[in-house]
Image (tube, rainbow over all chains, first blue to last red; front, side, top):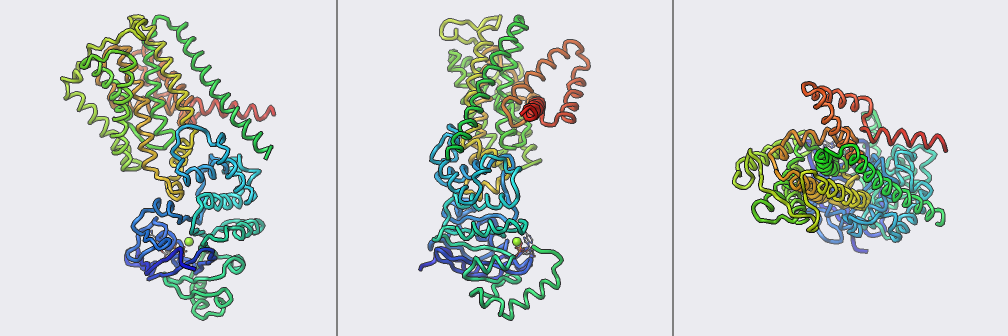
Length: 254
Length: 331
Ligand SMILES: Nc1ncnc2c1ncn2[C@@H]1O[C@H](COP(=O)(O)OP(=O)(O)O)[C@@H](O)[C@H]1O
Ligand SMILES: [Mg+2]
């Protein structure tokens, strides 16, 4: 299948420190890729470069063959490149229904409408409640976000991303900060992602990675040191070395 | 699904109920004001004009999080636009003058928005202050149009609908003002609940998140600034029509700062808060400045410190929170 997402020779340095070093990868619709690597390897930076939140020093990003590096972050989202955040960024005073409705309206170019309440837009409300139901959030859809559990907030991040109907979804540690008891629900949500969506997930929980991904990419010091099947990744000497080195130095998890 | 629909319906009827309460409260306040101060309708009309300015400020500050100490630029531009239309172009129909005020305010809103939104935080505040001084100085220098420091006079509005005269008693101006305020209030209630209003609330909290949804915070905020300018322009036009002069003070830093004080006093991010803050501040100012002309500013200062310390959500925000808690307890 032809690629929906290409990254070509992406490079980025912060005041001399190279954080992304000539990274290239390609994904097809339906791909399930996990991006792993020790703390500080440059995973979040990579996502920021791809989405346009950071400007690369060189290199290109393509969506469906179209070079999108020239577009800003907003332009890339509108072309189907959507991300979630490592730490949830939700609107505390709004409800899940409002979050998802806003995303739906934005996707359809209706978020600028100045009349009408989304509660009285049946198409929007139906789509929002179906989506929230698939993530187990329907009962909470009219609660304020500040009143719902963190695991549910993480699910809402996924719901918002899905409401935008992306072609490529970048998930930055979707289970970070969620108590062990709630990760099952997130894993289920990941398993239920649309089949034709290309998903790149950054994750530390190796159990989750192995169950989710068909392909694992390992980033260390800004360079891809492994790109292959989950079965091979633990056997790889370079990967082991990178992790051992980093765990010797790292004082906290990313 | 049924439960969902019921929940949605009750939510909708609750917001409509609040709209009706709001309209009723404005009308009741207008009637009470009329009965209490029949000889001072000019003050009440001025309160309405300033309330429109504070509502307009609430749109960009309360709903969108833009820091500005120059919002009277929009109000004053509306006042001058209405005044100049009447004094120089013979457009003396009060409705057309109001439209001139709306256009003047909206254009000023566009200019201010484009400039102020280039910065954030403190630099944004400084830009807004620079703008109000520039507007003020411009109006001062263009004295052949604006009357400069003498003010713009020669504004004599026609009879409203050809029947009601804008006379010395100010009855027509007052009722005209109440109707304008009600109209604006209803339109803004729609606006803040619309998808666009929700988008703006999102921008206030986290613009980066809004961008990750593919929406442009910049464009939304500029739109809001234009709307805000139109609302302030209605207030400016009302002031020009009712007082029949426009002075440089309508375009001043002091007026801008006072509007912000009124908004904080009433509570940002709610239309009721903006209205309540204006009424309390202006009645307090009127009463205290008459009772004690030397220390009234001190008293305003003390009132404000008390509100900020003991009711940080403003008078309305605090009162609404208190009532909501009481209701919860009863259930
Ligand atoms: N804006 C920045 N300025 C300077 N250094 C940065 C910036 N963002 C990230 N870094 C550095 O880049 C490296 C990679 O960070 P990051 O991409 O967050 O890693 P990861 O997500 O893999 O843990 C770290 O050493 C970090 O300190
Ligand atoms: Mg990270």
